[in-house]
Image 1 (cartoon, helix red, strand yellow):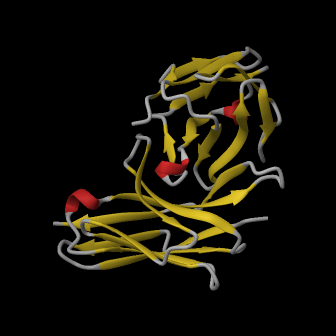
Image 2 (spheres, helix red, strand yellow):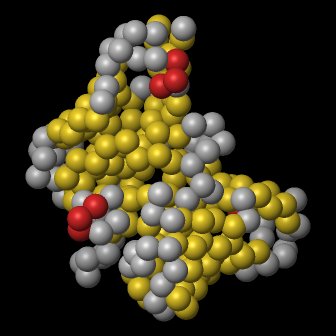
Length: 114
Length: 116
């Protein structure tokens, strides 16, 4: 499914430590996104990328940074993890014109900050 | 700011029933609307995408409609089965910036339970 792989699938980390989540795609899509999903809030956009080294903030970007040095990889870093960042993180790509610009999501990373 | 609402939040029906899930959005300037299914602890599976110029899309027992002017979409599931039990998410594709970047804005979902 658009060849999206998220790693790790599960992670437990301690408060104050940095954490990096990886999203890897194999089909050269330009647009990539990071969302978090929380009960009562649904899915919310953290950061997105519209090309190599081109990234911008979403609605819940505080405490997060991203990098995209290659088309295929979009990294999300929690600079100093807090308990409020315990969540399920989803990466997504936006499909091409011939795919009607539909979005495809990865399987998610379940992050627990203790 | 685009806001997406899904009603009801939860729905329980007997097997075989036809049902409708509702989605409303506040800004009619959408590029498309996409329906997803999410099973517990799993990722999102795309069900149907309706482009802004379309009125409906069908896939098997699923039919999604779009009325941009009223800010509404519905997902119709015919002859429901226990395997349809999941959370259904509606997402509107909307502009982030005038430069052309877009994002999906999600509703909080409808949790569907189909009882045998």
